[in-house]
View 1 (spheres, rainbow, N blue to C red):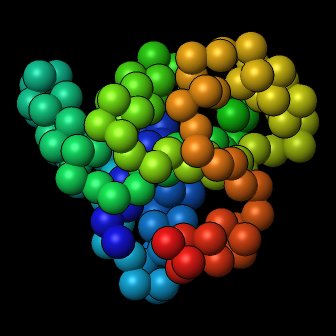
View 2 (tube, rainbow, N blue to C red; view 1 turned 135 degrees about the vertical axis):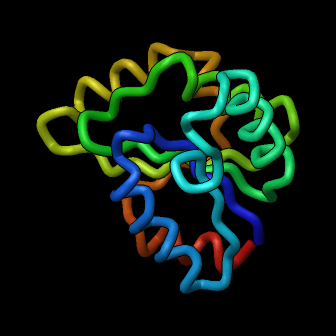
Length: 132
């Protein structure tokens, strides 16, 4: 299965760990920090990410560290939703930030409504993907 991980580039090391986990289970994994040249002009970055999202089978939004997500994150989720992709959230937010994350996520109706499923356990998340 082709999987695109939407994640903040500043946390590319954490994203790479998730990608390796998924690749060990036979998936092809793409994410911007690895598969998009970050010094390219903004329009090229946008188009490359757009192609990666449109070509994936499953779109994963990876919420980590402080759980912050911004406009770029929301746009990528919107593109995946418009393309009819299965959108899965994987929550790996630190304990001191989880309550604020959950409140914000619940309040952002158009954003949260795009998600098919949410997981906060990596093993359960992996099992689900194996069954797809």
